[in-house]
Image (cartoon, rainbow, N blue to C red; front, side, top):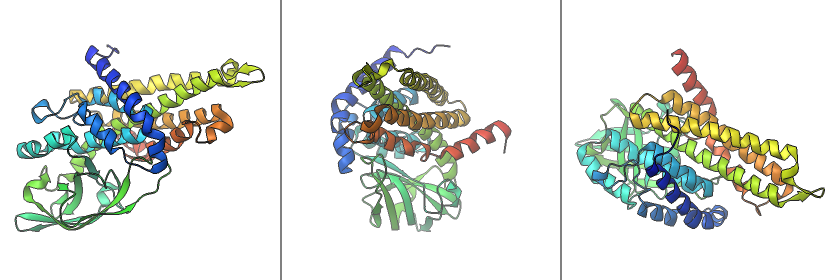
Length: 375
């Protein structure tokens, strides 16, 4: 068993780290304050091949695999969790399903645009009454000659007001079905833009489908296969959120160590106090353990091996760690940590969502238990 990253993976991680430090970090605080979407940062990421990390080279992608992809997302999320999740959704939830389930014509049409960054991708599954219970969705797909008409409302759609291509799940006569929908389609609209606690540079919106007509060749997979596609995709998406969580946790640890060196109390730097030392030691130890879990899940997915339980376990542990690490970082900073002068307040707000999207903490426990004990 080899825990060492390959030379190529180390170079990819360093490239992502440089990009995060030089391009993403300088604008992160301002974008958070202004609720400004990281479109410029996304375009620059695409120039480095980070928009097509799961796309085969024959379709213009960099074909890095999921393990290398999460190395990139972790580094970017360390600088800005909003940019990290934008890349994660684009790669794992939008491009990934087309790679796995798309026809050759669909791959040729969409993957080069997604991989180049010309198109930004999104994923529309959730609805008002269909969050954790995805099978309860009510968005309708009805046949209209040689095409389909989509009607309904989707909620909590990441990048939904900036996306060019969206995978939309709707209920057809055959069952839940996945469709490839361009946002420029007549009848496609954006409703409420959510005001969020964290990841405020990432947009989260309501998407309204009013008689959106899509051709038959826009069906991803076969009619009725939507839930299979959705759940398979979410296994990969959860690994992406693991990487976002690890990035937040690493940023929290880095900030805590830096502040512990700089801040003095009772005539001594904070790093001299055992209470602070123990907090930092625990965060660092749990971070190493969580990172190994995430990489194992990614490794299994790259190999094509079953990984539903491993992805859920990693997501459970990594998201909980992100919240604990950010909480401890605020505590170590004391009153200063509760202000916007230091970035740990942003890490604290950003971390909370990691236990909610791509399957809540409670859903991960259900998935894990079912995999272990059967349904």
